[in-house]
Amino acid sequence: MAGEGVTPELQQPAPAAASPSKGSGRLLFVDNIRIFLTILVILHHLMVIYAGSGGWIFHEGREDEITNALGGWFCAVNQAYFMGLFLFIAAYFVPGSYDRKGPVRFVVDRLVRLGIPLLVYSWILRPLFIYFVLHLREGMRFGAWYRTVYFRTYGILGGGPLWFIELLLLFSLVYVVARLLTSRRPPRLAPEGRFPSSGRVALFALLLGVVSFVVRLVFRVDESFRPLNLQFANFTQYIALFVVGLVAYRRPIGWAGCGCGSPSSSFSCTRWRAWWPVTWRSLTRLKAAGTGSRCSRPSGKPLCASACA
Image (cartoon, rainbow, N blue to C red; front, top):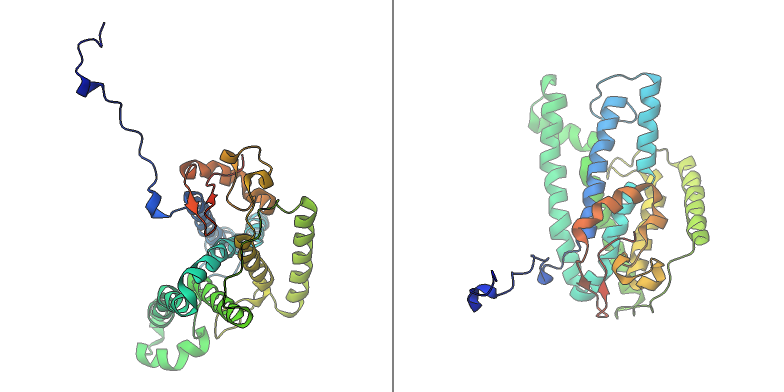
């Protein structure tokens, strides 16, 4: 037989395939969703450039009615959920971070990780970019322009892509204040339950749409609060989904609650396809790299890292 003359050393089983590091604490399926959303943000702004479907520093390409209609549809669908989904994911990890670090360390960590990049971009990088792209030919020196024009015209903080960092920092600080005013002890995790019914999800979406409509009667979509470069017209979605993310952390949903049929096909603590059907098919194609990754919660129960299929 071919295997009879093999020494014991050579009969050792082959090493198992490399698996995600348990100490890394990464939830790969969350990384996949973030990557998907980041790509969508890039495509969104490319569509604004080439279809003329929104306000941007530069436009190019055809701006006929068909192109504008397709570009407007694409951007409107994205705007209806993608930045809110970013905030939902970010909010889910806020309570656990606060519980581990306490209010002081949590605030310092947020100021370092979010505040410093925000200030560097808002007060150094963004002014340089705007000046050399838009105002260099006007003949005014940068120093004079920076002191007399920049903050009056372009705001104090935010603007560009860093508006999201500014908003996340603001929401995080509001969360700290709310926790300090309510209780110093971390709230208990609720017992595992079932995902909200389709009727409740539909009602939530309907109410969100109605409130957004009323808010936009006061704050137009194309207007922003200039000092902080924030668009209040979209705040209904942002606040609602940030709060839902906070609540989701405290109300875990087990695999039985997901209704997917088996633990291996459960999706963290939320069944994303019921919340954002428009992204579901894309997300299920992105889940493969994260399947099997696990991360422990304070209760000791693991989060499943694959999506409901």
